[in-house]
Length: 431
Image (cartoon, rainbow, N blue to C red; front, side, top):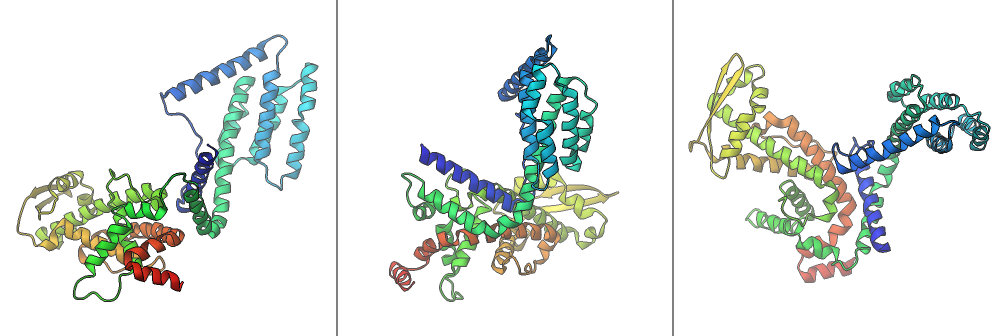
């Protein structure tokens, strides 16, 4: 059990660190149960019972402050967690005003002034909160009923703590980037070592049929022609493997574990890539049948690309065959598109051919590396050049980071795939 808990913590830490590093928009948000869920209903009942109990205690004669003092201690702790090292004077004021021993003495003598303490708490929150929280803090000053005031103070303090966590993440991100590769590599190695009863990592990767193994055979097939030169490239195999991830079968459970943390991002890029291929195909066929003059009309390209009906028709008739003529009628910039199946097109106008060109563009971007300029686009793809370049940059960033982190894990697998057993062993001995 302890080993499994350690493994879970390791995976959690690795996933969190990776998300902070690769997702520039990553931030924590206050957690709230889904609307209408059992958890939400239970939480609401428990909270209402707690605040009703506090209301009953404060309304008794004499008032009972046992729960109120506990809440004040929690408020003090939350405020202290928001202090920076330079808040020496403010920390001293907190200890002085929210002195729990003194507050307990005031309770015992019936001299506790909750409104005075609440005023100090609100002023402290106003000096510590981010500008975005100013309206919520100002609204606290208008509350007079003690229970409602304490409840809202806790809610705003929770938001302030979330703001502080997100600020800390933004501040630490540059420092995390410097240690990211070593950290993720070490954590991944720790995960592999703590998987009880699991087969070796190399065996699991080799059993994933559409990642490194299939990619090696694909590159071998592509390089077997008369123009092939030299041995297979490990980089070419890796790049082909990464390209497979953009077309991964969602039913396949053997997703490569080295890219598992980026699966959602890669799935989204794959869906966007499919739509770009469709859009480029529609625009290319429109240009072939209607001439380039229609593209000079203001807003034409945008309206055609945004037409959901066109995309739906394309999805319905696309396949391995060559497809449709698009007749475009423009009247006051209103489009009507009719798709008619045709066999008059050359293979260069098929959607599969457009997809191959897109694949070639992305592979060229991967080979060029993140610092090189994007390769030149072919004529049909220039219509979606901006979106394709953006997709290629995002994909290349994921691939470059993954290759840097997990390169040492891929190396022995690639040697076994690319070299005969004798050559692989000789290379190992030479190292």
